[in-house]
Image (cartoon, rainbow, N blue to C red; front, side, top):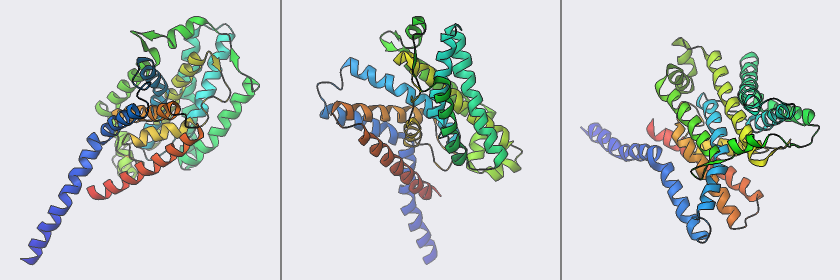
Length: 330
């Protein structure tokens, strides 16, 4: 009898924790974004909620959302991709040089941005499979390799002067909303469909949840590893094309440190750093949160290097919360 009473009391104690964990995973990230909007409007009432500033937040967030959507897939299988910033720079540089060589800008976007980005991601996945090393080690190496190639092919110089139609198309506006915002949302919708409504998506979640069990279920781990890194590379390639369109130049140092923002966007958006859990919607909201934080720090004249302190702190806090909530669910 005493044991029965004790069991019931334990269930009563754990039930609120489980409910809180579920509520946080479902609505916590949106609540954080709303809170940030309120705080930002208080800190900068004259500028934050102006149409031009909100447009700027969306525009800056679009690149982060694209990078984060790619990194999301690698984290989903309990991996990581640290090379997205370097892929952004290299694909942007290759696309710019193709246009300067007379290649039509739409072909430069396809070949130099999307396809070449996919190839670079495929190389990451191949190296992970071939060496058996953790993706952290592999992409820690390729982040330097890809950056080195960017500096070599550009002779460490900016490339500019390409077709104005390219900038008008990719960096223009539709109904006063920047085109990159539509591109980021379009990519996010496609990737969300893949994760929620395809066998590929289910297999990726299964690998992240339990790689050994997924293997025994007949899921090809190496094949799916190649796919997730290819997706990450393609997203970074699209971000690279948008970056050179926005700045009207391909910079060899573009995207430096962007991997930190991408990882922060994914983790803050509710993606479990331990794999197997997360949604694209959360990643998009996470990217917006990063955009709002960067924007309000700029509006309040906080020096840029403090932003890295904020991003690093947010990653630690988000992973800690994820670990605590995972324990409560178990």
